[in-house]
Image 1 (cartoon, helix red, strand yellow):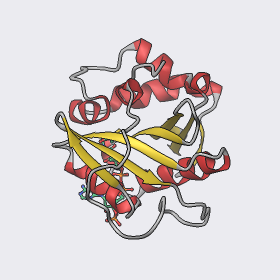
Image 2 (cartoon, protein in one colour):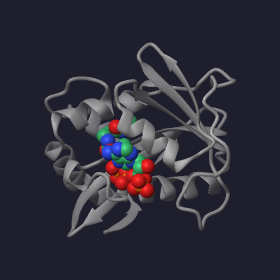
Image 3 (cartoon, rainbow, N blue to C red):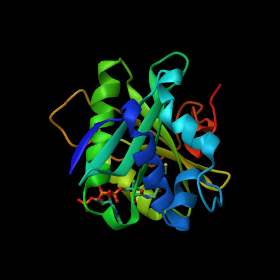
Image 4 (cartoon, rainbow, N blue to C red):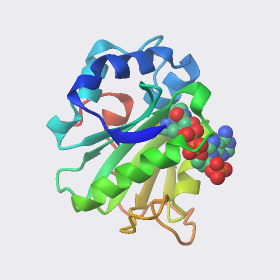
Length: 186
Ligand SMILES: CC(C)(COP(=O)(O)OP(=O)(O)OC[C@H]1O[C@@H](n2cnc3c(N)ncnc32)[C@H](O)[C@@H]1OP(=O)(O)O)[C@@H](O)C(=O)NCCC(=O)NCCS
């Protein structure tokens, strides 16, 4: 298994991965009961560079089995993240590798923190983000956790950063846009 940047030729492979996801995983990723991912959403996922974002994929035996992406805020100091790992590959360390690669790339572009939205019932994803960055701040709002975590400059680290957990409310207004649900932020 390897992690690399999404390339223009990955369209079919990415479509195939999203078509293999269980309904539950799709719901956790897009926060909507899609039986399958709409084509317009796939177009957005494939064209994230139009929003100055980046996408990375995990590849095993030539198939994409995980996808993570970020889209920076207009001022460019933070970026919203979304991530999914194919059902049969979950809990095997793929998510950590994807997030680590994404954080490394974002940091090089001057992005200092990641934000994200996790459904309140999605305790696995909440555990995942708390495990990948112990400086995560989170706030429960309208049935979802709004997360914010600084990105470590340490490219050797598989974690976004290290330190003390901060379960209090996020200090600043969270930058959370519809891109995490597959919508456009602009
Ligand atoms: C959230 C998600 C991306 C995590 O990816 P993953 O490859 O399963 O996670 P990893 O195997 O890298 O796990 C990293 C850490 O997260 C935590 N974690 C992962 N799966 C967990 C589970 N089932 N229960 C509790 N903690 C879990 C653990 O702390 C784990 O560290 P450990 O392996 O040292 O114990 C994946 O479960 C997923 O695709 N979920 C559906 C989509 C989603 O919820 N996306 C987030 C909103 S955009």
